[in-house]
Length: 64
Image (cartoon, rainbow, N blue to C red; front, side):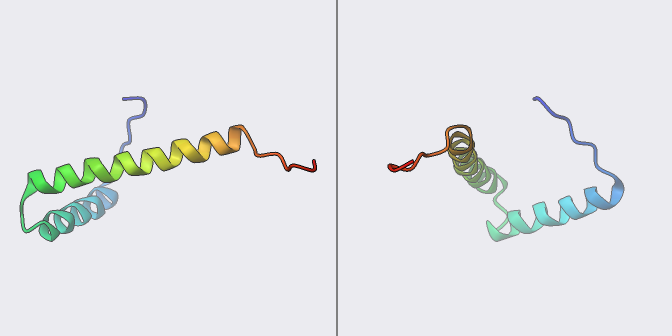
């Protein structure tokens, strides 16, 4: 892991509430929620990688 995030008690409580809600959406199935989170993170990472590539290598116009 490249970066360790430290949360204060308020941030920890907010994160716990979001996590509880996410698991509740999956009817209490923690493994199902975890699997979906992994898939969602993978998709987001692909989008970030694509955006980073576009920023690193900007498209040039045909006339430019």
